[in-house]
Length: 146
Image 1 (tube, one colour):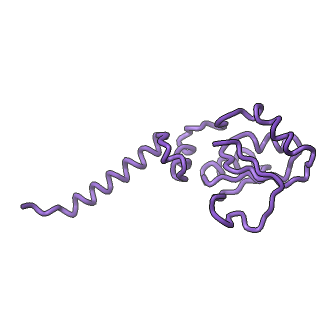
Image 2 (cartoon, one colour; image 1 turned 180 degrees about the vertical axis):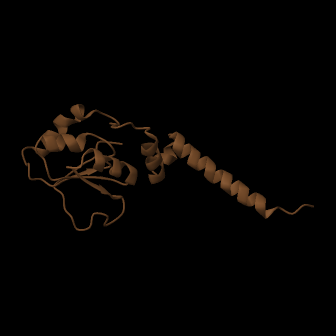
Image 3 (cartoon, helix red, strand yellow; image 1 turned 90 degrees about the horizontal axis):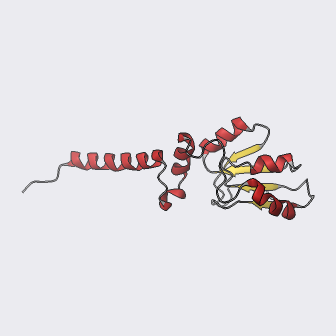
């Protein structure tokens, strides 16, 4: 009878980790990965979502609904959740809404967007975490359906 070799356990563990990292790098879209920060960091790092990406609708398609919601309250505090590399933050700013905080939990995309749009406000935060935004309050929250 042969006893299991401890070194093989380490190799198996290493290979499993490698397969997970490779899947993230390739951008596999298994649903289980979509809710993980590691997926998004790898996807944005690899360029999977290009310079800008809108998921369900374009900014032009959703703008009439956003505009109707915001009206002419140009001083409104707006939170753009899960902003990714969407143009919604830029569109809001260009339409006169300057109190917009764009948030995403991917540090990679937030860094990318800070370089691309330095005049807009960006923060890396996981809004699913209680208290992630501190005591800040917002008049409107925009999330375009990722």
